[in-house]
Image (cartoon, rainbow, N blue to C red; front, side, top):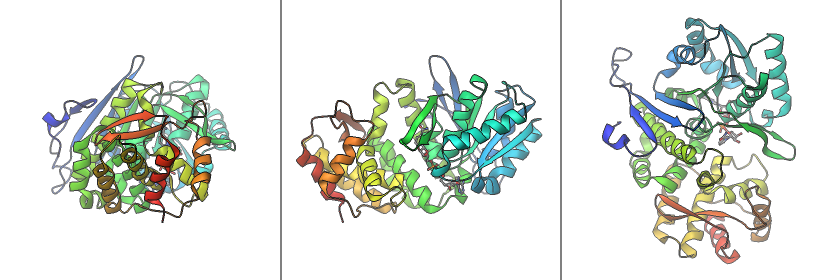
Length: 391
Ligand SMILES: NC(=O)c1ccc[n+]([C@@H]2O[C@H](COP(=O)([O-])OP(=O)(O)OC[C@H]3O[C@@H](n4cnc5c(N)ncnc54)[C@H](O)[C@@H]3O)[C@@H](O)[C@H]2O)c1
């Protein structure tokens, strides 16, 4: 449950609600809001069980337009599209619904072009908001459309995967993939609001849920040891999507992501800490063939590898790696995989777009809740990371 005292500190969080037992005699509905205060634009992330039913009011409060666009994917449309659409309509919007084919393979310029066509055919004007209902693929694609259609229209993120709630919906990075690489075409376009309803996670496949949990563990390792304790203590309730626990998990992670974005909106410094585990993870994804190991699974393995490398380099205590591995295992994420040989993995790491001046820059934990960036780690210590997760 949320406690105002604990809410002070990380990011700018505000407890804004209490029990609304009228909606449900059993569940305790809480609203938490995290403010993302940036030099040129600020917005609130609302985390509320049942928030989808109030989406229309939220959008109407931030965009005065007769029409809006609801962009979702084919999976989410059938599960949560009707609730979102009904709420937008009851707030007075005429809704143009755009349903994308689901999946990373569709996060591309062809999809963007087809959305542009639908908006242009409907003569959608500049004040009309684009509302993205779905995971990171929908948010990134719809966000890129919102950033560029008529040189930018208001954008509301309604994340329905754990990854999108705790990561991709906050921070304004939007974009699509091209054959040359992932996320190479994009923009910074901050949303006017983010509305996260943790109850939508009830329909999320378990494997997707676990992938989002890898990002939560990452946040805990890089910023908040008490969040790590919380995930350890509540692993079963989290996997069961127990409403109070999951709402707290989402809110605490949003606060970390928001705090990092507030410090470094354009990824010039500290936002790079969010790449903890990713340089290893990307190399694993690239060398095992994209799709076999999901991104979140690569991150989970990468967290273990990074902590092991850090321990080998004397940067952090070996117990940190042990604890990370145990939690990842408990959450049902992989702790080992059939990996390519060290040389192939080293080449894949070099190709990562975070490499600068051909040096591999690694984000490594120094203790639970803190990280450092190093580009001087010897290959032997990087290889110790691979050894820790090789089957
Ligand atoms: N912009 C950023 O800052 C940022 C950060 C991290 C990741 N990303 C991007 O996010 C994307 C990954 O996002 P993702 O993991 O959410 O993937 P996704 O959007 O593909 O969603 C995963 C799957 O879950 C389905 N789904 C979504 N919500 C559901 C629900 N509530 N119930 C049932 N099914 C549901 C989707 O249809 C899809 O099949 C990648 O493209 C990545 O590059 C962006």
